[in-house]
Image (cartoon, rainbow, N blue to C red; front, side, top):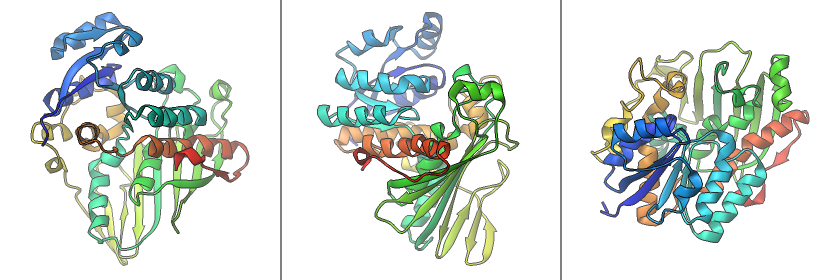
Length: 369
């Protein structure tokens, strides 16, 4: 492994604090700086992890010439603006999902990467979860046979989350179910058609003008005979948290658990079998392998809300960090890169637009291919 080190700055220290010790131990990273508007919280985190360089102003951080890359973990409305500022300041970008909230913002990020030659990676947890890596391994060994259909779902109750989530169109936060159905066949979405169903509380509707309790989208994969289906719900729908994907192949199929913490099912022909999904820490440098099963938010009294509902994100965090850093060190594109991230994100944005127009077929923009 290369001994080159990348100076990393983490922006946003709620969920973002989870990544600090991973970067600190990764052989290709120097956990250089942190940024948080709340100075008290900034210093608490900085003191706890021994991070010396601290900023309350993101624009000031971007002026620091020692920073090579930023990892953005802020509210979704800030993602596009902060990513663009970083790219234009000469910094590589890793950003939590989604890439942006509009198609135009996605376009601007893709164009900024093309203009600067810098790297962008959307840190989509599901495509680095142990469940996805398990199915990916089966697929690459030809155990699934020919892929025939893929399905994803992400259902949760978001009452009690920060106010900007209230009434959010379900498909505007769809990357956790869109990501795996595109990543496994290494495909991009060509066009979408989505239906809305049901109705959320009136006081929620007024925030974004989105009435639907559930949105269900069909995705046609480009240059492929495959299609996929994804389902999202956020409010007023009875369902345990579920962040899932199913894959149907000619030889074997994989179906996610119906109830969290149960085992998934592999169908071989018509014969079902429950299977235990192994951990994939062996794919990582030994220095960060332990983070697939433990991290900052891993005790009962220290749980981030995304972890409580998100089942620890499937051990994905060290895999995400490793992919981003090795892509920078090796001078290659990470997965998902800017175009792939835009394609995944625009599926959700355009799916909601389709639902508002009664299921109209909407093509993905050319810049995402």
